[in-house]
Image (cartoon, rainbow, N blue to C red; front, top):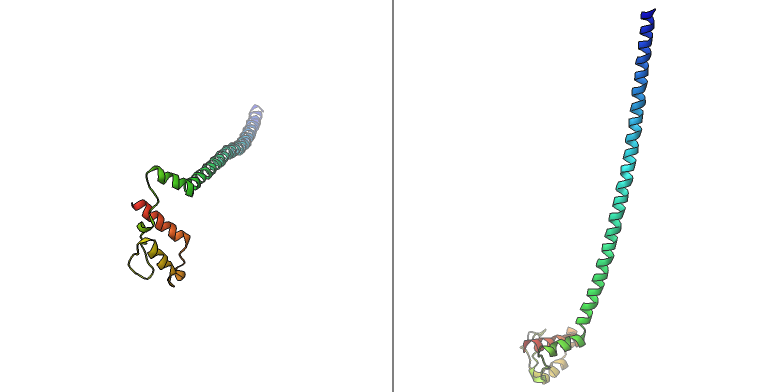
Length: 146
């Protein structure tokens, strides 16, 4: 009987060990699943903080860009350009000092205010669409070249 009881009890220990191993495996799997979910949550939180930091940086860069655009507009304003030109010694050119540099018909450049008036009176000027903007280019070209 002792042998029989010993075998039975050995078999019972074997079953208990197997149950313990399976319970331990289930517990380890549950722990691994919990760890994965916790790790995902930590990573999602970390990425969320990173996204917020980038949004803040984008907002700061947009504000800086808006400030610089305002500075550019202010520095390119005619009053500002005139003040800067006077500071560096540029003066308004005399009407005779103006030279028209380009011509749609390939004519030679014309000089002076009378030539400009005669040229504006010709029929081909209406076709080129020149206006105040073109006259401003001529003024700037002559002002900065003297």
